[in-house]
Length: 173
Image (tube, rainbow, N blue to C red; front, side, top):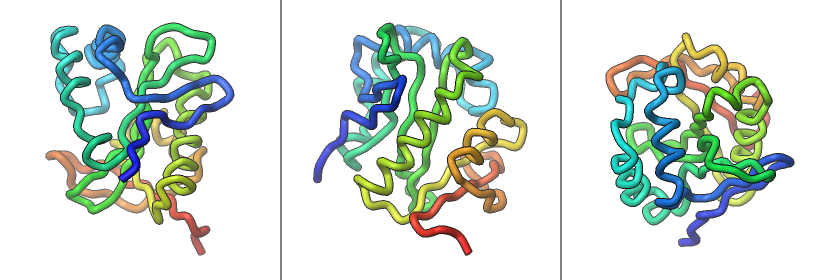
């Protein structure tokens, strides 16, 4: 199995697996209440917790892909993440993204997500990619629609009922 620790590159971003050097930025992302308000995940409590999460992240070794850290080509720390995650509950691959608020509204999430979708189809040869988001997360829904995903009802996941979005390699009829 090939392992893709380096993700796609876009006009403004590089994406690759985070390392423990990214722990402080990862902590700032996942301890920010504004960022986390739609995730139903608890806020991270320390840089050490972030470091442990990065060090124990199994997806690259288990599936060959995962959520990549997003970095501006102009330099600086991790601004968020975007990538693919296998969800065994659905036997499907999910796209997910999260950026620090100072990078919202610049089209970066759309840019990263579009490149990630293309990577999933072209490199991983996936047939379909899904996304889950709650209906209140209007910004995320806009990104999903801009990258060509379509609504496919709701599902029960992790104690909530998010909207499910899908995109297939073949155009929908």
